[in-house]
Length: 366
Picture: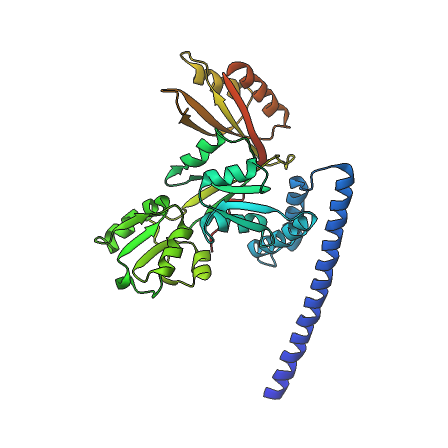
């Protein structure tokens, strides 16, 4: 009976090997097709990324799957395949807030896949500068968190650097307390970026009330410190655990579940419409009563859904502000174009920051 069972298992494994070989052959064939499309688009001087086409592929595959293969896993697998094939046309360089294994790095890997070249930067402003000067093709920056709100350093950089938003990613974040030994009693200081420290404030107060916290410029830097000092604990990503060979002390120490950070992909040119897009603007208002109300009323009359509005002070101009607006739709949509034309006429300052596909809220830090 045992011999027969081993034969049956061996036969099934042979079938799996045969399937894997066919999958590999098809992946090579798909890669060749993607390179040919890239060559043809070069001749037409067209953008290589077609977000509408990409979304249609996902929709078709999920429909044909009929929930047989786990849908989230299916989308993750094909995201890596599609991204790798697209990057084979021209490999993307992506700047992020470093060092390695920050949540920005993790967001970049989830958006661009593992095939891109990642370049760690010391500050968010450095990411903007790299993209504006053309030293990297893309950058990825955090813009807001569902608990702590806007990332002001990112918003301020949009006021200083000429870049465009190319995409977004919503990353559900789970914070881990890590250190070299994995023992809480070894931790004498907890280091992390200011936002994760704030997002875990109550947990730290309850479980490590006498332990001081140390804000540093990124979660990756905190993980690096923990790797070099046995008495430092870090609040860091799952990617940091693998990168710096740290041990998990406690998983999921964030005070609120559903903690999500929205990241923006910045570059030189926004993509064409996907059918599920967001448009971001930077505007200044006329110096008169009711100016903001007039802007909001004008957008409402055009039936434009305003997803976000955030004000930031203009450096060097006391009590003067610019406003960041997110509208649902693409600049190529008639009503969004009309709304932008109206704002240009009404506002003292107007800048289109980009139109781009809306992020998938199902993305998670695993």
